[in-house]
Length: 104
Image (cartoon, rainbow, N blue to C red):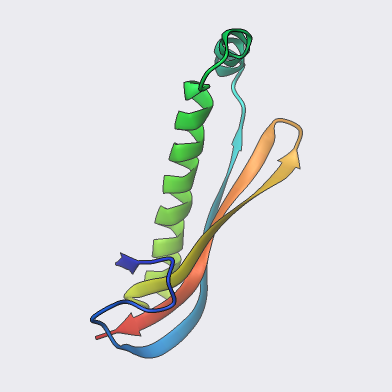
């Protein structure tokens, strides 16, 4: 599956537009990570526990978006984007979306 943030794929011709494809996951903060994050917050610097959690959430959202695209018959995704929204206190949704297409 080719995934790109641009509207076109260099060297490929879009022969059919499938439409919206998406995948999401909702992640909540973890007490153990919160304790470590609080300690890092005091000292300053990157909060690696949250960085890792968000990276895993993005990968899961991409995986689900690819599954949706394949179900709809796409072999590529163009104009791919991420969005994040707060679902409840301490929980956020990561949404990956784009346009499913068939390319040659």
